[in-house]
Length: 402
Image 1 (cartoon, one colour):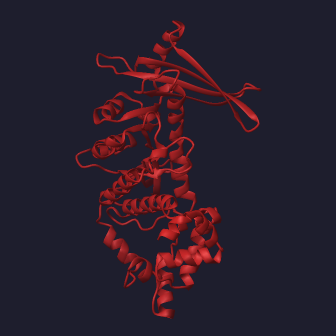
Image 2 (tube, rainbow, N blue to C red):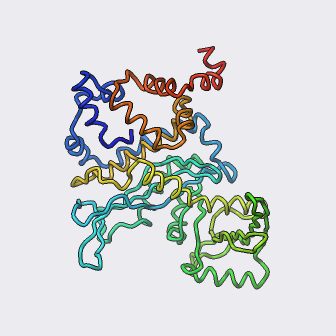
Image 3 (cartoon, rainbow, N blue to C red):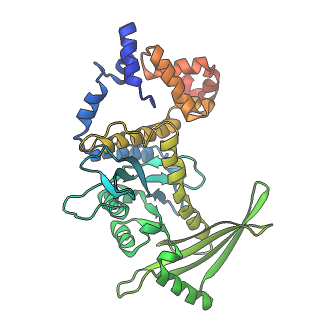
């Protein structure tokens, strides 16, 4: 509902009218207080939410709603990245990470990997089960993003690999152990690979460049008033590091320049296990570039579009903060799926345009009126915006047959 005071509003509504939307929309009665909810949720580990993410994914696959996300010969792109969702110098729990500040104080914080299915050209992403970066039993070192990424792969490979998944990651992931584990578990990968952190690899690339062994490919396209030239350099079977068991990877550099001015608009390099050719190098590089959609279409939306990702809903002593994040991610996932599967919701979101406007309207309506069901609420909003005719013309024969 994106309404921090929803339950309090419903208590007031029940006092005035003898019923409320917590009852009618959520089957909640009586209304619990915030502290009661926090107490109930605190001992529940967030992993108990994981099956819901994958149940939604299975339904999306059955309904062919994942088809538009498939690239590179039927691959789904899953971007892995970490984000911080809580920090405090006072509040903390047994699962907090810690950092010593320059002023001598201790910062307590929580971070998590929030994987999403992405696709170049698609504004939306599909949230998957997160992996929380928190102290692990039997480990003295503080947990980190790389270790959490490996745990996530191991835990969810059996569920995800049958969907044909290519993992996208940053330069921290483009190391031998991560690549080896990804392939062992059945994943493919496209990972950012910076020269500063892979000196041996780039020494080899310089050698092969001198030998004329690095292939080149060029594309031009009109982007508004600007003509962009995208230059690709690529080579297959280059050793990632030294050593007897060094792994061979395929490398690609993507550079975008303004055709008129020569100004560089974008540049990055990636390693992958996908075999590169002039026919697919652009698609592979564009897929790697799509990794940043996890920040733009996922983390940024969660932090700035009403989900209050970094808000302290209640910290607890065990898992409360993490479980609250899982519930927030599920809300974001459900809202995404509703745009594809519910005609009323999709039309309202389209007409109201801004996500915040939609939820602000719902917040106001449910504060002052009791709705018998979600259908009643959606229908009320449709009538208020005079959208019935647009929906009927869109559905047409479906309405007649029903």
